[in-house]
Structure formats: structure tokens, C-alpha cells
Image 1 (cartoon, each protein chain N blue to C red):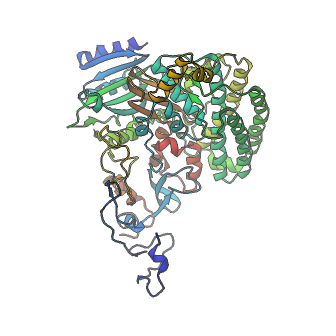
Image 2: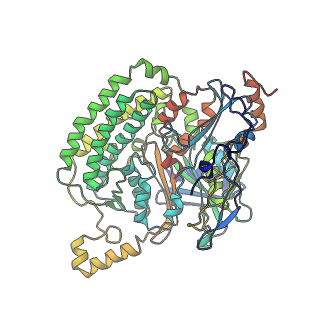
Image 3: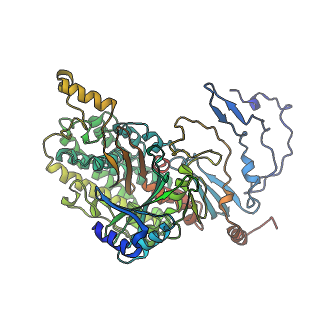
Length: 455
Length: 184
């Protein structure tokens, strides 16, 4: 498609009266480009009718906005370098103070829940990877645990330990990205390189384990995709040596840094009661002083047997969120070390061919193995009728999966309780009164991941 | 643990509880939708229950299972003090898909209820901003209903000025705060 405007000569350009632009205000009543009338409905090949709206005109929104005369209207997002993902906040500014802020989400909505209903149980894993794409393996674990709860099975000890190790490394990755990018937005680029180097090292481990760097899809119902490779333990031990250095380096640069403290302390503070009422979970809730961590409150996979602490903040501001995340990374490293010390041997999948695929030599050499493999691939895992809600500690908080099964190879309904969704919903109210420059610090510290927010 | 919660709710609401089940460790309480707000409020305010978190609000469309009423709105509550969890479910018929809002009980239900409205078309009576949240404002139908085709595509581009989310009172309040008004 060629844009008509590009071919116009200066004489052909539509005549508009220029309105002098006042400082800080958008001129109104100017037609920026000619309206192109389009049909309201068009029919695509295949006979499906598609509703075509009119060509979008930016100022249409401004014209109808009764506040535009008195206040400056700024859209941050949906595509903005300081917004980590595609979401939009419309701001009404009085000077640099935010008078009103309204968030708009849904730009990355890709119907995860609807799509799950037409896939077999084991085919949902790639979709879960793309929820919180900063820690994909934690989403795999969350979903797998929900289906395992529905099936009423327990996975072998070795699989549990590997889930803990890779899950905690994913959590570190998640916090690396959150803290690193948050600091970039505040002008501290060096920390970003430190953290992303560590993240690359974890990616390399995940690539060895699963074949993919980012979207691992390594979890399986009843265990894991495959056992870890030889030398896995050595690689994790190497990470245990290298990762603390990055954390310490950033700690030294930032924790007592005057510039960061000025930008972060007291910004977007929230009381524990408010945070609970808004459904906050994860590091943001703990920064407000509520020690709720699913791994401690409802331990799964022997989390109660490891020696680790839940860090909590006092004020819930951006600075406390930073401190909580930094400490959580250290605690996660400690958990990884303890989990690695007694990594048990044995299988990584349940011994049930109706849930985990049979080993390849059985598939190719025995009729039972081949039939089981065929039925598992074509009909899927035959789950019983029922409903479960299962919850794990994701990178941002309680990651819940509510599953309804009508007794078949596909889920009847999958609902993902995304921690971001609850954390982000009071952003409009809490931004009021803040300064414009605080937004990048606040949104970064909440660690809102659009993939999880919009699903 | 679950008996404690069930017993408390039975004591308070008696026959208003339609069904109480405890499967796979998840306590589920079915209530009539005329009483659901009372039950939720009791769950939060009662000192023994103290469900401080409303973790999730969602819905299920039972169309293809042939269950009546067609929809069920599902609340997942969690108590920080006791560690209990409970699932409250209420049936919603297709011809009158309205439930009382729980925004006055937990603020966290704000967006969750908007999402249920967006995806299932179930409206929440008394919600301050019952508007679509994930789909575009011009989107027709409700995507997670079972009779909505998964491959239907829309091309919607009209930008949302979001002004409809500001109430009259708030507009007055904002106007009063502007330091250099020019529209007077």
C-alpha cells in the first residue's frame, strides 16, 4: 500500500490554517491529514466480514477531551522506550505534576485462555512461556503443577529438584531484568550490562538444558522434557560463582548511590493494607512489609527444607522494591546451592505412559509403547473431570492457574491469575500527584510484563 | 482446615449455601448470586475467616457442558492470617448476566471484574467503571464464551481518549486544581 500523502506535491497538499503552537499545549482544530472515507464493512476472502473502522485521527481524541485546554496531555506508550512492553498511560499534566493518569492495557492480548481451550494439555506449555517472558520456566512449573494437581500425581524427586534449580535461576533472571532496566531508565546504564551478562550466562545454561535460550518450554506434565545433560551440575556451580559478583557490583554502585536514592526513596510508597487490598503479591508486596511468599506460606517441592529467608521492606517504595529484589536474588542463589548439593538420581518423569511419553526404544520396538505414544500425541492426556486452583511463586508474585476439565484431552477452561494484572491496576490512582519523571522509576520497579498483563 | 471455613459459612448463611465441596484440597462454596455479595463481605470482615486477599475473579461458560445456569462467576480468596483458601462460585443465567460488584469489599476485584465483563459479558452491578479492559472498545461479542469462534478477526483502530473513565465530580476536582486555567 502506498500512502497517498507521500505522493502529493506542495500545491496538492490540503490547505490548513496553521495555528501558532503555544508552549506546552497541543494546538486544536487543525486537520493534520485528510480524512479518508472507508467502508464500514468489508468481506475478506472466505466470506468473513471484518469491521473496518474509520482511519484513526489523532486529534479526534484531543477534540473530545474537555481537559485539553487547561492541561497538557501526554501519552506514554503504547510504544515507548521507558515502558517495558506495550501498554499506555494517558497523563494530564499540570506543569510536571500528574493531575490524572489512566492506564490502558490489552495491546499484547493474544487470547492465551481461548487458545488453550483448543489445544491438548501438553500443548499449552509454549503459550505459558510467553506469559512472563522474563522467567518462562517458572510459568512452565506453575502450569504443570496445576495439571498435576488435577491428575493427582506427584513428580519424581529429581524432577522436583531440577524444577527448583532452574526455577530459582529464572527468578534471578527476572529480577536481573527488572532491576537492570529500571536502573537504565534512571540513567545508570552500567548496571544493565552487569546484569545482562549474568542473564546471558543463565541463558546459556538453559540453552544447554532445553535447546532454547528464552522460550524454554522445558516443563512437562509429570516431569520435564528430558533429563539434564552431563556436566549440568558443574555449569550451575560455575554460575554460583559468577552471579554473586554481578549482584555485588550493582550493590556497590547503586545501594548507597545518592542519585538513585533521590529518585527512588519515598516514591510510590504503599501501605501493607493497601497493597493487600489491591491484591499485590511478590516482591512489590514484600517491599511493603508483608512477608507473603508462596514458597514459604505453602511450600511445594521441599522449599521448606531449604534454609532461606523472605526479605521484606518497610515502606513499599521504589527503593525498597530494589532492595527486596537484590536480597531475593541472593536467597535464590542459596536455594540453588542447597538444592544442587543433594540432587537425587532417578527418572525425571512419572512412570505412567498415559501422562509421560514412553522412552523412544519402547515406542519403536514394542507395540504397547507405540500405542501409548500414539494415543498421547493424538488424544492427549486424559484428565479427570474437575477443577483446581494451583498457585506458585512466579517472578512477580502469586502465579495461579485455575483449570476446569470436562474429562478429555483438552482443557475446558484455563484461567491464568497473572500477578502483574493485580499489581498494575492501581497505577492510575497512585500516579496522581507524582512527577512526570517518576513514572519511569515506578513502572520499572513494578516489573509489569506485558505478556503476563494482557495474556 | 477447610472444615473450619465451611462450618463458619454454614453457621452464618445456612441454607443459602447451595453446595459445599472439598475436592483435591480446594474448598468450593456455591451460593446464589443474590447472596454472593453478603458472603464475600462476610469472608473478608469475619475475624475467624479474615480473607484479606481476593486473588482472582473469573468466570466459566458451561454452554457445551449443558449446565444451567450457563455461567459461573468464580472468586478465589486467600487469608493471610490463617493461610486458608476458598473458592466461591455463583451461577449466572444467560438472559440476565448481572452480579453485584465486590469492588467495595476488595479493591483488587476492579480489573478482574472488568476482564470478566470483557471476556464473558457478565456485568457487575455497582462497578464504577464497567468497561472493556483487554479488548478494543469497538469489539463486538465476548471472546471467552464458548459460542465465540476462536478464529474471528477484527481490525479496530479508533484510539480511545479514555475521557469516559473520568467521572463528573473528578472532572470538577481536576479543573479546580489547575494552576493556570485558560478555558474560563
